[in-house]
Length: 106
Image (cartoon, rainbow, N blue to C red):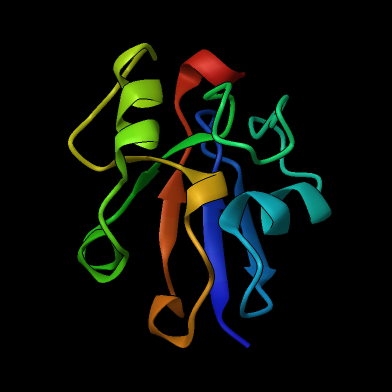
């Protein structure tokens, strides 16, 4: 099972065993990670599950689709490695992935 690290804007770390096939947002919600609000429940319609995917894992996930890019455009603190965690599916390739959360979601 892939192991994912999510780091809150405060610096608090959450090391999570992430079942394959779930989304990063679902895994974070299951682990009660503060800063992943997920108001829309994973429908890619709110942007409250925004995270920054560290390299090299950012290159290992499929590119954002038009809907996700549209949502990202309206968020605060957008960076080149920004993604909505509801759109990132856990795979074996993501073992060790580090995700950082923006301070705007504290």
